[in-house]
Length: 465
Image (cartoon, rainbow, N blue to C red; front, side, top):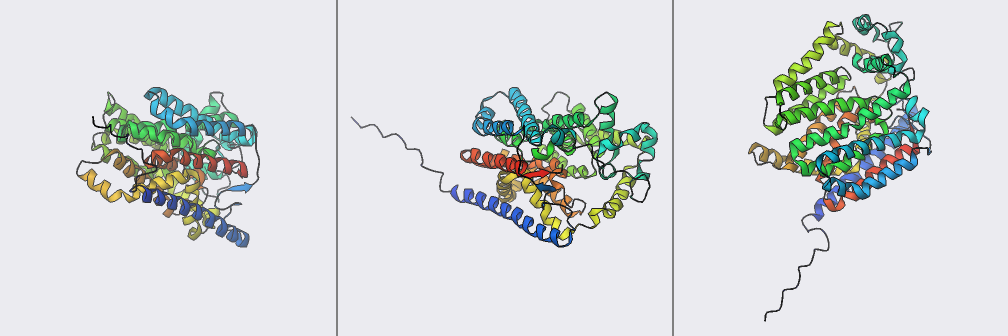
């Protein structure tokens, strides 16, 4: 008799071909960490020298204040739960329960981090200071006349000029909180709860888009990273988390329409356009999402949703225009207002790098390593897409790199000098899925780094937003 063959041995480590790539992942993460450290050191020197950065803990708008709070135990529990059980649940749960779990876990992560600073400081008082939207609720008693004269109050020279955040955004942002107040949900507590609740849904929107464009397996790999987003530190403390959710659902609906994974793709595309239109009246910078939107259509190889989506966005613009608000005029005045304030004092030579350091903080080192892989694979991904032979990894790489390109355009514009840890949350959410390109064996290590970064920032610094 022939002796049975010995059982095949499992490799002791990663295949030799993967070792250099994993080393390069670590090099990319280390380089990003060094960028943050360098901008912190250089920024501190500049701020102590002439005060032109106007931030207390460069490159972040924050103060050094180690502390803990009622949200600390919950934040630690959520982080541990996602690190230990997240990858397994993401792989095994059926799709609909998974989306509910991602939504609930994302909200739990945002809420717990916000409550590290306590209810008043962490949630209720964030949107009530003199620069925020809630400070002008009474000036919107008559919405029509206020919209028609909105642009007259943007420049600082006007005796009744708008506070910084109201002047810096189209009126849709302020109107949101005006309408909340009208239905009995006024005050900072309700405003904070709105931003956290809506902002928490953004992770599901990205998950839905990933499934449509790259397949369910890739979306599942990204799910834990969407939950443990370092950007959650600011999602619960500013209105930008709300803005991020609106534009995220716009992209998700466009992806569903473009891939024809819904029954009425034209109607879904129209609703996507309505969301895009509303996003443009929440924040001027969200116009840059035209790049990811076009990428979605290219990846799906389907331009049919473009017409209904444009119709939906045009409808929103028409309503605001007929109400008396001129978006283009307002943006031109905002540019002047920006340079009237600290924006004109902050040096672009520092912030062009400082902003990127902020982006590292809100996306985490796992996203940096994933983006490195996407960038390295870009030439081949483009060739395979052109030949209609692209893989799920190719499509994911092209999507996240399109978002990165939009972020870089914002950086070079000079209109995002500082405070990008909150302003760039809409872009950060779409960079997080890059971590799905990392090896499965390393996933928990990278998740741990993501969670540790967010916890350290939230417990060592008192963020202004």
